[in-house]
Length: 187
Image (cartoon, rainbow, N blue to C red; front, side):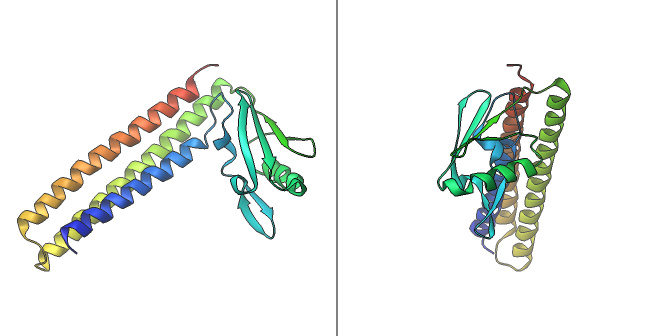
């Protein structure tokens, strides 16, 4: 592999890790209603589990309420069942055309659990980033052994990978600390 290919691979994989982390953090409840809270819910319609976003518009018109307006009114009951079956702890209210979910305020204990989950996600992302760094360094070593790149190029690649790793880990820390403060914030 050339040094550009190695760096491109490492950078792309780290960006995917950040993207996965941000999606996971969006699904963690804060004291406010957020359309991202129901992103993980899959509705079994048309013989296939489908994300709610593909079946309905999801909005949070008030700080304590999520409104789900299905594009096809005949699947309102299916969406309601999926929300009840999820482990989100919501009690949806169906009026035949749309679903309203009142998001209850979080207790201190629940907030602590959410922060613990955020820290878990952060650590998982950092471990993944370090594994990507290790793979990139290994690829650089192998390319150098195969005489595809010089020792100096290998060292430059490793330095670049380390710099990228630090930058991405800082990004993870910033995203998780922001989400932690949102969760701990009292309404």
